[in-house]
Length: 99
Image (cartoon, rainbow, N blue to C red; front, top):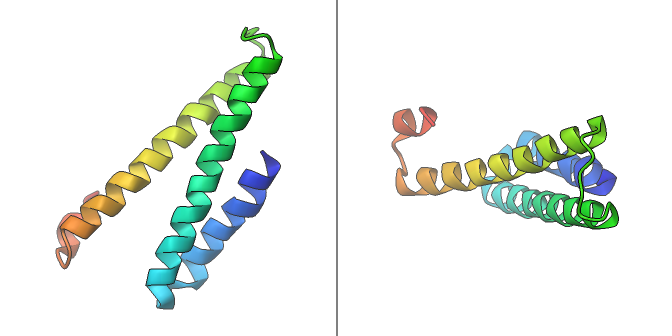
């Protein structure tokens, strides 16, 4: 999880911040690192629940883990939706910014 959120999260933020001039490369770097974050989070969540015997105890770590799990899924799907909408509404900046 530290690799997913530390390394790939840093790559996502850095590519979005410093590669604006190279927007085609920026989009692919952002997409690939976001996909890795999503996949690693899902895989480690499943492994964690498996190692716990498929039972959640209701402890703080379990609750926060589930929140992060579903939040990551929600953010990734939101990014996919926003990008697909931006592609369909090419050159309609005012409409895209409402997303």
